[in-house]
Length: 286
Image (cartoon, rainbow, N blue to C red; front, top):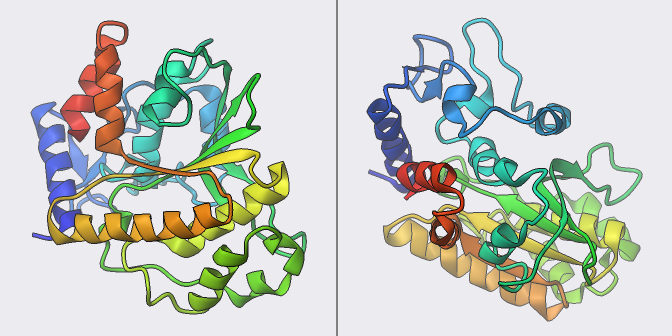
């Protein structure tokens, strides 16, 4: 059993234990890994603001039709996982438990701010599309203007793989200011990425370029948040994350990395304050 199949199987068992009915991607067709309602795949109903932001994203997460569930209804949806972890904190006055668990701020310091989903930051006005960053936290009274978070679930273990960096991103010298090591990596993985099997390095590079252009160099923190897996795939993925981190940090990019399992275990220390939230995350994702 490969890593992605194992994760999905665990999610199916979680759903069965809760009596949640599952369906295929086209009703009776396909593997039954989709909930029949969006609410069945979420800890709490989507806030209106989060629903609006997801609907504006380029991934079409909320687009379903008669007999065909939306992408976010998949048990292995990285969007659903991100929403289950982060939407709970939206609108709360203090985000310090969350940001400290993510490794973005020191523990014990109050953190006020806003959480948003599917944020787009243009790299070059000539490009039609801007990369979508899964989660963005705008902290108030901070040295940093933003905390960007790229979230992954089973994607790193998919047999479909990922593409390299489109050469068009290398044609604008201005966007690579302060990023010589990152640019060297970008050249190596353009057009085909043969160096990273599990980590989508090209996507992370585009996020760095977009965040740099929007907020300025060293004015943001970028967190790669992924779901860990046992065995060789998980080990290889972690090695690739470390390799990318070394390159990004050599350019002064404030790059963080942590797994969902590590994050949830840190959040679980606050079970008394948020019992239902912690119970849901630990039962489903640990």
